[in-house]
Amino acid sequence: MTNQNYNQAKEIYSQIGVDTDKAIEKMKDISISIHCWQGDDVSGFEGGQLTGGIQATGNYPGKARNADELRQDIEKVLSLVPGNNKVNLHAIYAETDGKKVERSELLPEHFARWVSWAKEKNIGLDFNPTFFSHPKSDDGFTLSHPDEGIRRYWIEHGIACRAISEYFGRELGIVSAMNIWIPDGYKDMPVDRLAPRRRLADSLDKILERKIDKKYHIDSVESKVFGIGSESYVVGSHEFYMGYAVKNKTALTLDTGHFHPTETVSNKISSIMMFVPELVLHISRPVRWDSDHVVIYDDELLEIARELVRGDCFERTHIALDFFDASINRLAAWTIGIRNTQKALLAAFLEPSDALKKCEIDGDFTTRLAMLEELKSYPFGAVWDYYCEKNNVPVRENWLKEVKAYEKEVLSKR
Ligand code: RNT
Ligand code: ZN
Image (tube, rainbow, N blue to C red):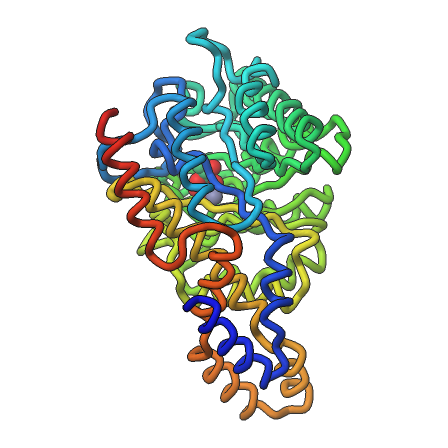
């Protein structure tokens, strides 16, 4: 059935000059960085409360309580989605064998089990220093803190994390993208917007001082427009980090939930690719605020995928996910978000981009609009199903049965 449908779809797409086999082939080189923090509501293993103005709402049973459970859950998810994906870790997922280790003193060895697991699974790892959920970030400031001691602590955390990220890259032979996001900002109107930004730039300079081979590790910085508790002023705004990334040749992270509601990340990609060496995407879904809902197959996700394909951005783009929903089965949340992102990319590879660009340059906007609309009802689903089958992962909603069985056998016993 899947094959028959695929052959029909292949024929239909070929009439507009699109080769479905080639589109599927292109998916081989794309990996999605799966965020470990969807598995436990951004709790980590330090035992602290989630702070920093981000929130996972819901209390669905069965969340992972330790690294082994988290890895077991991620393994299950990896079996339900196609592609050679990566796993994205945060510093709070260190395994310290019950010992309290300061974040400024974290070492590669605290991630040795993650690395041997990644080797076994043949996947890459990405990394994030954790500048939240900590007593030294409780007043809302970290790398831009006016207190030199606290600021130094967080600089050291950043330095320690780069060594861990480099270790991931060296051990696994796959580059690790390390993303810096800090919660720093004011609830109410500041009178000095400049000084915290100067301190942040200085802290970043200190963190990034040591040169690291880009084969193993890259640095990225993530902006935000507001957070809970930083409604009036965020130190690391878009302008700040865009400027910082251009000047210092770091990567820039665009989180789809971190802009004004009518701004879209899809429209930023082409500009950023012109001036910044690499792009990290945090695919998320904001609902009224930066709520980090599960990624759905919506227009903006499709437009982001199309921009990446049309601009041939994949060499310099790291696609990561960033959502955390604790109100539904967490493995289902992951699976839905990952599969949707992959669907959007495959759909984008099935667009006759060159022909459409030609219409545009010829001024034939009628054909451009007509084709973009007709393409929406092309038999994409048949190509996606075939792609899943080829990758030995469940076709259509069949993955859900597996998640339900896993819930019964594993999650319900936690
Ligand atoms: C917060 C940022 C950040 C975090 C993760 C957990 O607004 O999006 O990327 O969500 O690092
Ligand atoms: Zn993010």
